[in-house]
Amino acid sequence: MESALDYHSARALLEWQVELGVTEAILDAPLNRYEVPDKPAKAKPVATAEPETPVAALEADPVAEARAAAQGASDLEALKAAMAAFEHCELKRGARNLVFSDGNPAGRVMIIGEAPGREEDREGKPFVGRAGQLLDRMLSAINMGRDTPLSKDAVYITNVLPWRPPQNRDPKPEEIAMLKPFLQRHVEIVAPDVIVLMGNISCDAVLGRRGITRLRGNWQEGFGKPVLPMFHPAYLLRQPGAKRESWADLLILMARLEEMP
Ligand code: URA
Image 1 (cartoon, rainbow, N blue to C red):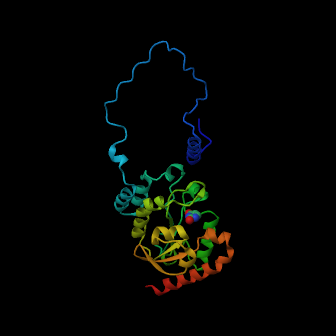
Image 2: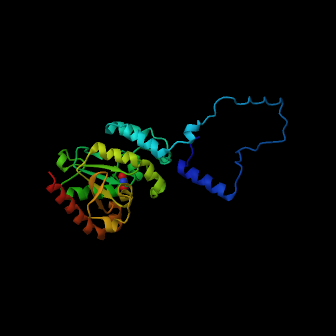
Image 3: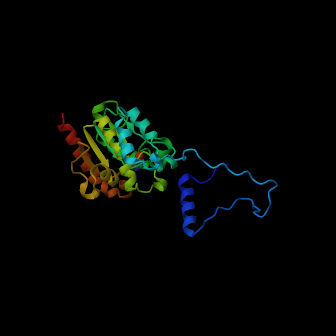
């Protein structure tokens, strides 16, 4: 029977019950524990084989494994496959899709967002919900876009996390640290001229700093590239008054691209 609960809700429910002091799971049908079985049950053979979980798996270092997997990927397809095969992130278990990227990898600008939301999880593409539509309008205001065939006007889009966090909660620091090697390799392979960081989470992942109100509009260096932090489009939907600053940031981006060879 398929459960109506998704993985994360079921897990939260179970954790809550354990917190309440529940120590036993009760079956749907009553079980008479006083009933004498017809025949004594056969004694289970004592396990002499290897334990099911090898010691190496218990000692796994997810960040080191992510680094090794990411470094082994020589192109985008291999990187996507390495991420799909990475088993250490709990988020993967509750997500419908791995959201890898969208846009033109030959584009001069690489945009890094936070994590997929519901629509992105469903479609397997970053920034396709309301925030994504606003992002597309912002890009078209400076004659750029993810579907633009000309690489000089094209952007490539990805996120810090490829799997949707439950209920769109903020990514945890350990999730960011675990998946950062994949993001760094992603940037190395795409090799954009500049990177735009959308919001605090991507600033945290790439620059190790938060405080978007101060960071926005000022060029920094991250992963060896010029990096421009901007307000996240989801924030602009909540605070339309901040669009003025974002327009200024788009002009800063355009000016930098014009002065670069
Ligand atoms: N917000 C993000 O940061 N990324 C997405 O892909 C969608 C919404």
